[in-house]
Amino acid sequence: KQEVTQIPAALSVPEGENLVLNCSFTDSAIYNLQWFRQDPGKGLTSLLLIQSSQREQTSGRLNASLDKSSGRSTLYIAASQPGDSATYLCAVLSLWDGNNRLAFGKGNQVVVIP
Amino acid sequence: NAGVTQTPKFQVLKTGQSMTLQCAQDMNHEYMSWYRQDPGMGLRLIHYSVGAGITDQGEVPNGYNVSRSTTEDFPLRLLSAAPSQTSVYFCASWTGVTGELFFGEGSRLTVL
Image 1: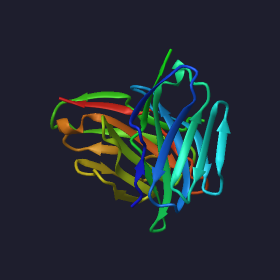
Image 2: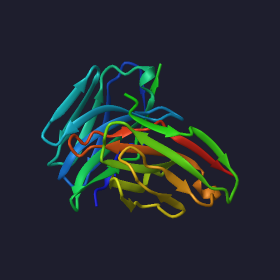
Image 3: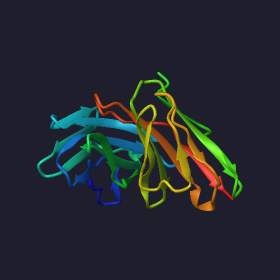
């Protein structure tokens, strides 16, 4: 069974610092990995999708890397802003018994201090 | 594109009442699933479907029923609501081609 871990559960950084969020998974045979953002009381917004054949994806200030052999993905947010305060979740899609299976981390709750 | 549409967004029930949370997607995705999200527990899978007519249980299926008569729709039924079912429910869909996951906006359910 795929287990996904996001540590730390919560972190605070001063505005302008770079954010580094980690997502670890136990089974390296993944199909893809997707990062989401969730604001309090809101739904999940997709940030980046990395296919298993890719090493990284970039969108604006966001960069996500994938290292299947070590079972890790890193979400990097450059020059953090108070608007980046949110919970960030990673989702790992694997193939199991011929079907897709999703596993989620519990999220990194981020506060960017002005 | 509408994506994944969930209704209602908010609902208050009394213990023992029944209701259905609706989920529809217009992307012709074969995979659909229902999750509940509770503080400190993360997203937990209730039921999922790999195509029309095929459903299976997730990790917390008790108290919930599903059916998938069409590719587009995947309703979640609460037959006799209990306070333990107070939660935020998310519907998700994806295709096995890209594996990109799409979520609905969520349904916040309170059972008194």
